[in-house]
Length: 639
Image (tube, rainbow, N blue to C red; front, side):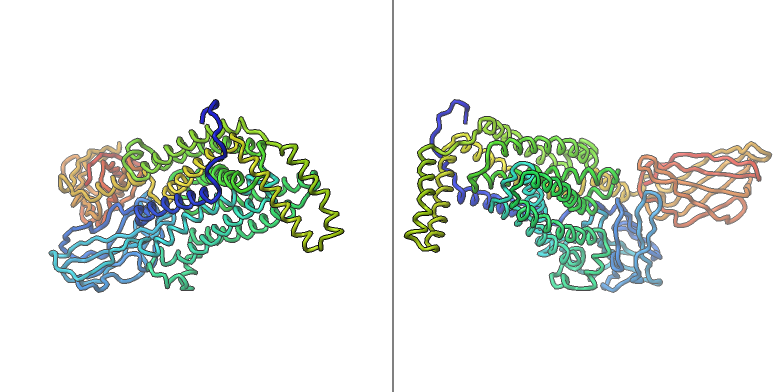
């Protein structure tokens, strides 16, 4: 509507229609998201294994190891190795943590004397940002064979339990926005809203939604990350194991903070709403703002401490930034929902409250921009990840939606600038005064007390109806209602996309994991690595040559042989020999290797682990006397 457009009458959108439109939009958006999202992607990913997927080994390995891109939590059955008949080939012990440096690796020991055939490795774990991950691969001993192993096609976090858990996660964010944003709207923008029943219902429903969703997530956490069966929700042992994890502790902390939030709501809509003394109300406003802010920040921190912000680079900075981001989202979108309810359901909100919310919304957008830029850099990291990963694509959609929301908000701001508080018409005021003046006489002379109370209620309803009709006739207020309704519609979609981002693997780690997995599974192009490196320790008989063989020269386990020849070409014994491997491009290493002396001038080490392919720097330290020592290095392409 332009500034000069004629007023065509009251807005055709009424409360039931607006509520129905929003309800239908919410159902449609969440239905489409849940139908198309599938199981939540996770932060950690498998980057390599030994034996590798599809490998054929001559002899049975002593153990199977798996490497991951990020830290994970494992249990007794997180890694299972099954023989061709489906029986356990591993010792069924808890996986051993073999992590070192920047490499996350776990291994399980195998039984001795395993027969030839194809073996299946099935794994399931929980990444550091709380999401379950799983997968399977095969390797063969001697030669491939038929296998009767049948694994579930359901991914970790999928199935009906996963769907319900995802619904609860979406509902939790929605409840948080209504609880925090609605409370902030009342305290900052419209203190009179504390006495308005629609505002009370909005905030209380936000609290109930967040509490119920948190309870559902806590109960379903065990089957969500494990069996996928609803019956296991009430397994006390499983619940205890959940409480020992970071996500479980975060959910319990959220429930405790929601108890404090219930007390806050009781004071806000009870004691605070009844305060008439301006100074007392001002003092109570300050106390509620401080206490409510602490509780709101604490609830927001339960997400920051258990999801993407708590893992990866700069976690100590990312968590408080994430808290600020969530609070800004709640203040903006929750306040927007509160304004929509106030405009459609209450006749008393004035222009000053709307203008105050406009200032709050602007401040929230500034905070969102600052924190969003940092989060985008941290979680995406490159232009290729922005356009080539699901996280990056969702982030682009989110930014576009924010742009649309800001454009609609600009129209709302225009309506706000033209908004005035319409006074009751003089004739209506005189009529109302006349009715009020005659009411006591009627009540005292001719009307029973019950009838008087009924007449009083009817007059109150008539007064409110007239007041609303007069305000509905205000074209500026009608235009504001329409633009705020459009903002709320876009905000629903924006909140859903934001929630999806929390359960999607960040673009940075997805690219790193994909690169690591590709490199880790690539066969050695040149076979065994052979290096020759001259050295000179500076002392007597300190010159010679180091020859290195690394076989098979690929990711996983390798055999290392080192020969040292003197300047005369004969085998040369030295008091000490050490090696270290470093993959500088991935900040891995140095990984120390201390070979054992096998014969004069010959050292060897078995089981040398190369976690991923790349251009590795091999440092060799040779000591020829008590004081003469030198370290030489050479790069070698491995894998």
